Image 1: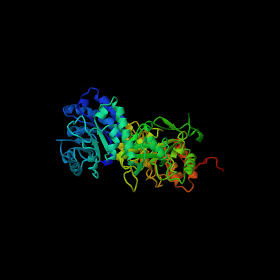
Image 2: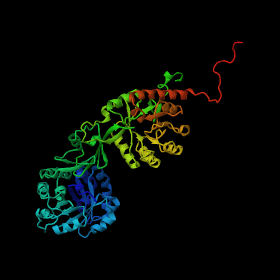
Image 3: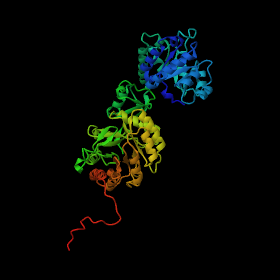
Image 4: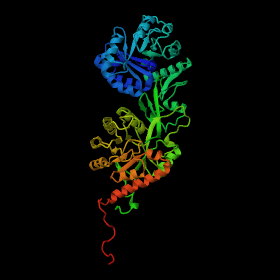
Amino acid sequence: MIRPRSVPGLHVICPDDQLEREDALLTMSALCTAGGAGLALHLRPRRVSARRCWELARALSPISSRTGGWIVINGRTDVAKLIDVDAVQLGHGALPIDAARELLGGDCAIGVSVHSEAEAFRADQAGADFLLLGTIFPTASHPDEPGAGVSRIHGCFGLEAPVIAIGGIDESRVSTVIEAGASGVAVIRAVWGAHDPADAVRRLIAELETSRLRSGIRMRIEVNGKPVELESSGTVQDLLHELGLDSRMVVVERNREIVRRDDLEAVRVAEGDSYEIVQFVGGG
Amino acid sequence: MTLRTLEDLPSGDPLIIAEREFTSRLIVGTGKYASHEETVDAVRASGAEMVTVAVRRVDLDATNQESLLHHLDPEEFFLLPNTAGCFTAEDAIRYARLGREVGLSSWVKLEVIGDQETLLPDTDALLEATRVLVDEGFTVLPYTNDDLITALRLEEAGAAAVMPLASPIGSGLGLLNPINIRILKARLSVPVIVDAGVGTASDACLTMEQGVDGILMNTALAAAERPVLMAGAMREAVRAGRAAWLAGRMPTREWGVPSSPSTGMLG
């Protein structure tokens, strides 16, 4: 099972028109870098070929494992298995959770798209690692649906799987859904409709962090095997400062990857991160 | 430079590992000392240039748990991170990478322990970790047992030196199998550093007299009643043993041979 708190807060969905673009890889890797560990990039191929999806996932996977973010394949469990991505998203008509788990093993998180409290409850019971709960606000991609409003998020209170709100969410609505109890947001237009998508990702992640902290949700991480709660967000360098450590004297491993000294000020601490901070001591 | 007197050592007879010259053939560890001050005093008294350190978690609860880097100046000593306490190749590789990230060098004293009671090495895992780390550009100094075949394989895997034990880590039993150590030395091209088991100055001297390139020790100093004094004794012993080896000892005989002339005796 995936630890629920480690699911990234911002889910950016790449629909067909984005997957088809010639510069897709360039744009998407820029998003991965901008989003770091806080970003789950969903490849959602509907009419796009399996091959195109596989090529993109294969190229993006090493980038996301460096940044600590996730690549999520929507629907195509075959591609997810081949590339060994972080998560698969199961929507309408996809494999059941059990079957997907059997195919993908325990290291691949399973997200399920749900559109009511009842569906959310069933997916949670069936062992989903996170839920994409729609449709919260009216959206261009589902023009016929009125939008359930944040009451649907309230209705999912107490579920084990983190709830990621989807549907008409932009920067101005992030705080509303987080206050309602969502763990994160999924967006399409808020990023792809922006003049600078990478900048939109950065702004959304910053807004998510602010909203969480404003709602009294502390960032929970683990340092040297012990739980640590942070009241503010920041970089790994800020974390070392908070802990009273001199960055020249220690080495930091974040989620089992060494953070190079030059990157300490660039890498942001994300919810659910696990750190090992080591130093030289006497030894033979 | 010709070596004629003890004073020609060590400058005329440096220890060379991976093209780097060390003036002292004694390498010392920094574990188990009573204080940082005692560590530094003993290391200085030993004359060692290469000094091993361990990589461990920072203790977040202790306010005054300082890095050894505050006390051992990397300008004065060549710090060699170890992978002590690792029981798998994967762990040892992880520790080696962390040690390198401190930014001093790409050298590692590689230990993969196979048994908690004896602390004897897991030589399969050791070979595997050596291959991976050499491939990643590390200068690997593996701690191993005194087995020739393993030593040859480590050399083949790219180890910069091979470090067989004299006896188990921390045992102080001295050199248990001088013959194996001599065989290793005769057959390997890379330097042979005896690592672990030396207990006192005579052990160190006897070990160096086998012709090995150096000795690595920790507990023999740290667990002595007066560590700084023992460090000085070890410095002298390693130097004496090396000089004796270079000097070429006399052959042994079972019967007495007079040292004074048998002619010119009074009538």
